[in-house]
Amino acid sequence: MSFPPPSADQAYFHISALEGGFIEDMPLAIFIHSAKPHEKASMPSIAFLLRNSRTEETLVFDLGIPKDVKNTPPAVQKAVAAAGAKCTVPQDVRQSLLKGGLDPAKVNHVVLSHVHFDHVGDPTFFTGATFITHAETRDLLQNGYPKNPDSQYPSDLYPVERTIYIEADDPKWQPLGLFPKAYDYFGDGSAYIVDAPGHMPGHINLLARTSANGGWAYLAGDSAHDWRLITGEEKVGTLLGCAHECKEDAEEHIARLSEIEKDEKVRVLLAHGGPWYEASKGVKGFWPETIESL
Image (tube, rainbow, N blue to C red; front, side):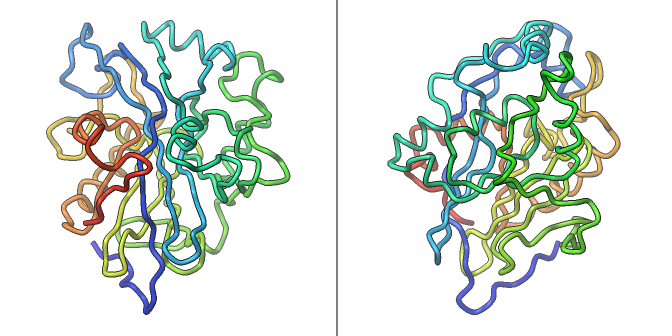
């Protein structure tokens, strides 16, 4: 594994986790191979705040579950009910930011890993942010709800005038370490948007420097829903359906994450990382605290 070395006066990010609600009683067999049909999983939906060490610009990666799930498209509510699951949002991302002293309207950038409901929150509170996403997401939203009443994706999700869609053939996509396509968003090597195929069209991750001497955090979104997939203790589940639209692509991407996780300077963080959440909540890492750099 080889990521670019830091430059002189290298910018990096202070990263904090944000509470974004919970999905409870999801069938575990959707996620891991060994689970029995009756086994359930309750998962946090974690978002992340990144603060630039030099410019103090802020970026939020993912927005968690909407505070009122009843405002999501009907297809979302049907899917959650069909899985026998439920959502609880004691504190959404907006409230998490405010609790730590940051007004969501002051956030500069929002990167959504993808447009599943438990990652999009309520973008309307981020009135000063530029939204960044993969162009494949645009294609989904153009035929979204309510135009297509069966779509889980609201067509008005992003503010049109403040959204950047990164095209699949943009020449700024370049190989980075084990990853075939990464996009140097700020142009200074401080944060890379990483193409993360498998879960759904347009799924992206974020690789960010966390120190001036080689520390990194990899925000993996829904690349994996169980930490044991990263360690190799488990395989992707298929018994009750699969959490990924293309299992083979997802497995290839998970294998890359397994490799970078072995690097003592790289911290891999999952959107639904239950063990990390339980170990960190109330201790350190949630805004206004920061996640320690490796």
